[in-house]
Amino acid sequence: MSLRCRLRSGGILLLLMLALLYGVLALLLDSAEAIPDPPPPARVAAYGPNPYIVCRRPYLYFHIPGARYVQVLTTNGVEYAINSLGFRGPEVGSKTLKRLLVVGDSQVEGHGVEFDRAFPARMNSNLRVHGWEVVNAGVQGASPVYYAANLPRYLALQPDTVLLAVFLNDWHEDRIRERTIRFLRHIPDKRTLLYDPTGTRTMSLWSRYGPARFLRYFRSAYVRRRALDNARLSPPGAEKTLEEMRQYLGKPELLKTQIAMSEPYFSYFLDRLRDKGIAVRVVGMFWCLDERVAHEDYLHAVSILNAHLRKTCTNRGIPYTAFGDMDPEFNDRWLLKPDLHLSPEGHRVLADRLGDWLLRPAVPPEGQDAR
Image 1 (tube, rainbow, N blue to C red):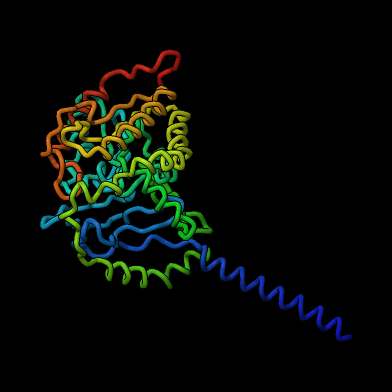
Image 2: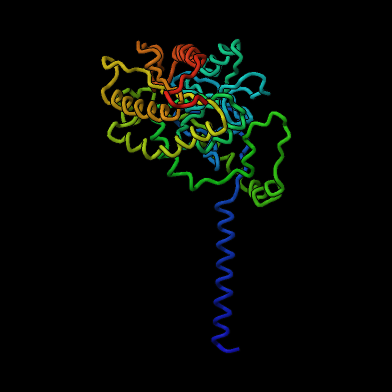
């Protein structure tokens, strides 16, 4: 064999070996990774690492089903019990009433309060006599991109109406998710976190016997150990003041850009629900619109976001309101002092106001049909 032929054969063999190596590396780096077992119960700082939350595509992140822990905000803690769908709260039973699904971030999830004192649970008690059950699908840190990515989980819960609660920092959270999403591994079977009242869901053969099945054994021990190492308290930042949190809530000069960047996620979420024939309502979780109390930057940011949400919803015939519109007389007892989340009293007031609002028939703008 001539030297040229040997070099050509060697080059082809080298390329094949490189392609094989690339394929193996791609499989290892972008393979599915099973949801780990939850770490043992522990106390976790509200603003520290949370070992009971994992990051996976396609749902970005979620609580580990079956996890139990105590979240500490100041000196006291509240219990988090996670159901099999990865949401805080009891298991979702078979649908017997009209179902209202409340979607949102930590305000909905009930940050700093016991689950049954958060406004979705209070609404569930208040509205059952009117033929409604209320399911809490709030997740801390959620934002428009999260709502769009988790739409299959929401649809699987068979809602008749979805109530979306938005907060000022939701659009800032989108930028965080966008920076990390490409590095996330997949869960082996995306149906794992979908509501299935019949209990007949099974894993596919690929999920059961494919590479992900074997890789989980190599990773699960490490994942659980890393999670336990993170389960230590860090300073919860209880001394934060409103002044220190101004940029966290959204600088007015940046908010319009943030809104524009997140508009595709927000519109996709709303439009897909309406295409499925599911009624939608949106509430802005803006507590205080009184210039005598709130900082001018906060009021400016709220004004921008309020106008955007009202226009977006009006164009789609979706009812919209803001907490400040429903109850303009602000009371500081409605908020937890460390971080502006709702207190038990605030949750009670919001549940009462939203219940009254939701029971009113939706009146679409002129020329548009109610959904």
